[in-house]
Length: 210
Image (cartoon, rainbow, N blue to C red; front, side, top):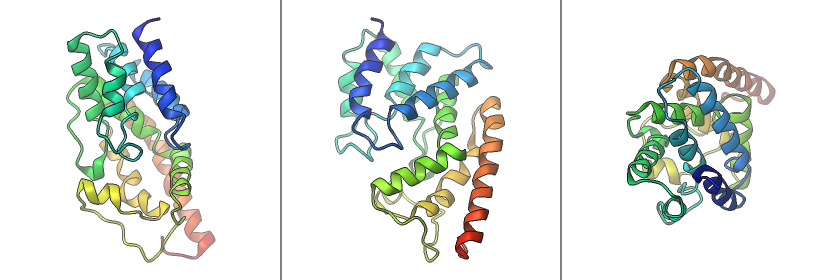
């Protein structure tokens, strides 16, 4: 069994305990997105990309109170050089949005994985994931009285329980403009437009200024 197969088996045990917004299906979609983008970036290291995709959410603070515990536990079990481990960790750090306080994606692998993950946060799947997460946390579908925040700390972003539609304005509608790769930018256009159409129809159906 190679390191990727071993890693996949280990992370599945973690993701099976997450809700549908961050389960292993999410990982599979991000991996597909990453490979689609990597096809246009021949210099990219696909092993690093795939390992980072598999691991990028195992220590997500939305689900884990002990920072990087699962990530470290799994990485230690893989037969990887120190150089590869450092590269994978660097990629993972660059993925998180963190309320807009993101780490710069310096390598092509980091740019690809960030774009791949954010593509899964927008469009039809992104809409479904947003409401899946909101439902799992008992959040309102929408709240017309809620004002989306433009500037917030990482702590504020992670702890304030806003309605699901508010999340579109605080994060999802901002993602397409921050895509790092040419392919990522191209793929984001249709998904972003679909979210705009969804919100337009939601406003019509609810009669609310969302």
